[in-house]
Image 1 (tube, rainbow, N blue to C red):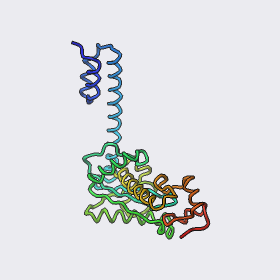
Image 2 (cartoon, rainbow, N blue to C red):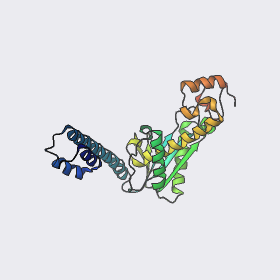
Image 3 (cartoon, rainbow, N blue to C red):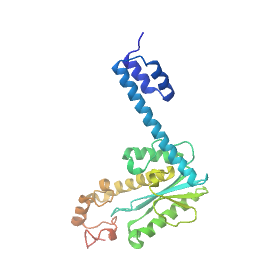
Image 4 (tube, rainbow, N blue to C red):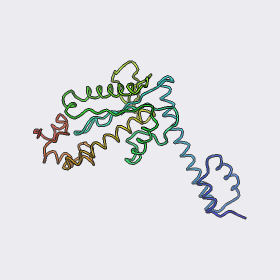
Length: 259
């Protein structure tokens, strides 16, 4: 007795690559449109899954290569460009297994997916930390010095957790932190630990800005996260600056500060 299209579709939806190959051969003579459509849908799903698996494998493979087979810590920053809020640096050491499905540059993920991945990263990581530089410190020493301070503090925090690091994988341009530094342009899309660092840093900083929005609701920090959106700039012009603002970043909007 022939299987219904619905039954075949269900089996194809649940099939892995090996099962699909068997099903496809068994259905070669079935010309029903619903079956042909279900086969094509399953084929596209499996191709997408294979491509994603290859992408994840590449994130971990490049990391192993750059670390010479040793232990790598990935670092990334969030909040370099905003006019309010902290500069935040994440640092993560990941084990080779288990791998984290969906790991990617934090900017490519939805807020919900970032939250889910951040929880997985913290559970799986051999070590992780998030370090902040507050606005007044950024104003005092500038962004380059703030970045260097935060990166070094993050590395120290990782090593303080008992992890001996062979390579420091840093997203972006050289910071000359120490001889272990390896710079990876667009590293948050290329290396697993840098991607993980970008995610935990983004989730932590976004949470901070949402909490500050309750104290300073006029600026919309929950939505703009401290970036200079039009509504944010308008609020600065109307309200002046609050203690969360980086005064040195706001001179284009106002020449006066409240603090």
